[in-house]
Image (tube, rainbow, N blue to C red; front, side):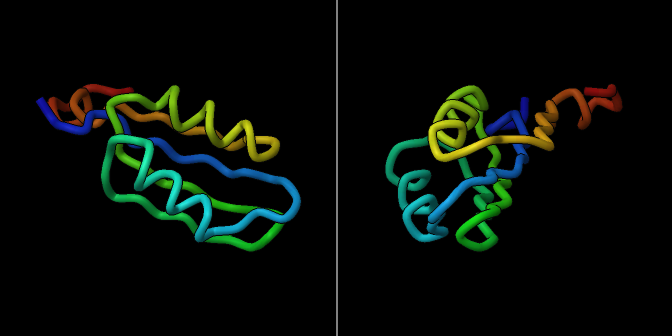
Length: 83
């Protein structure tokens, strides 16, 4: 089994978003790897591998509107299955 299992990607649209603050929160509070946080103070792209994608969604939703959400099961993909 692949660990972490889920590739989580989304956009956060909001006001006064800060890449560094968001990155620090992920590193200190969420379990996972391959973190990417890029954007500006109104739109941030998140890419994160985790076993708990719901925690990523919960935090990001607290920062603004989240959309273009993609959660892919990398374990299924490694076995040639979709999802």
